Image (tube, rainbow, N blue to C red; front, side, top):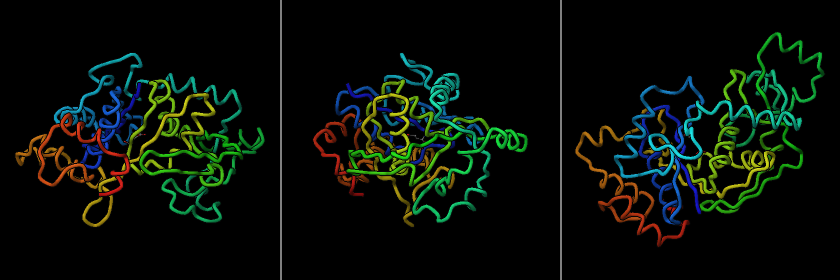
Length: 310
Ligand code: GLU
């Protein structure tokens, strides 16, 4: 049984790009008669907006997307909101610590940028971590502890070449130690890192199909490594293209890209929006009006490769 999910962060209203990803994740799961889980990824509390969760859920429901487990529905793997799962993350952090796979890091961002010999090409997450704090002595650690609260980094093995086949993007390989280095699993402000929490949640919620935006393709090798180190089965991945604005920049909640509210106010119906989203990934001709279930019938006939065309 396929178990897919959509896992938005409530940092603002969902824009059309987020909604298209949600729709595609729903279609991928439903075309296999699979289950669909909704999870609220609100760990980064400083960036969370109070009303955003409710309006995200309202928008998804208004469009006609449903979920079998998640907020408002419950389910066997509750809670489905990350900020209510901190004790669970502690357990899995302990597991990594017990295996000596975690160490404290006292570097500031500026120090890491400075220490990196060459900036990592195309890395969205900054330069590779050169391992500065990996081999500190106990004495050095306690000295630094007095100056700064540490983040926690995963000791990425040297043999960390990860290969996977993305359902949309095709075969991918990344050598995690060479490309990213030891990465953060808990930040210095004690917030669990996305990379870590998402793996624990996908594993415990029995997710075996991850469909999400292509901006997260570069995180996938790190996550597969964590699945392996924690002894969890690895899901299949499908990274779907992001919607770009007229200037070729991807939509962003931060830039206030259009959410549903103005479209709804202008009289657009869910069928209009689903039609537009379907057109934008070449699933329907321009001007079609349809529900997610009507689109599902079409989507079930398509190969995943269709998503490559905008
Ligand atoms: N919470 C992440 C976001 O909103 C998505 C995480 C994921 O799908 O793995 O960008």
